[in-house]
Image 1 (cartoon, rainbow, N blue to C red):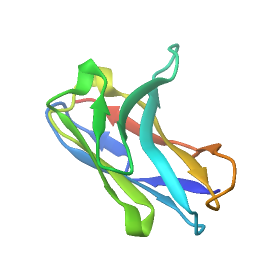
Image 2 (image 1 turned 135 degrees about the vertical axis):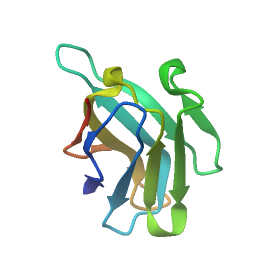
Image 3 (image 1 turned 120 degrees about the horizontal axis):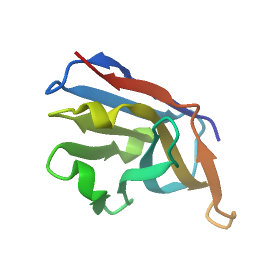
Image 4 (image 1 turned 180 degrees about the horizontal axis):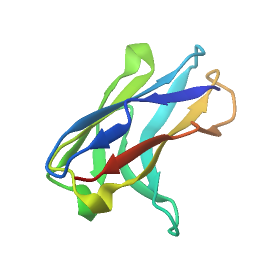
Length: 120
């Protein structure tokens, strides 16, 4: 399963960015769709996730600033980031827990990451 992120870049503190993630193959289900990030010298952490039923979860550091959404029909999900802070600087990764068919096993699939830099 190929997972591809897009939308990273350089933004000033207080600014906004929208990340997108897409799975190119036709899969039976992705559940959940998630965003992780890894800052230099730190472990990768879960930022936000959304289930196939639409339930969302966020790490405390981004609550009220980031919004995850999805288009299940297109196997695409998004991370809208607002009020960005320098500490949000990291490589952001998509993660898709997916299965190809109704009776297939679940697999963990990662994108290559997209850099988000928050700096003046």
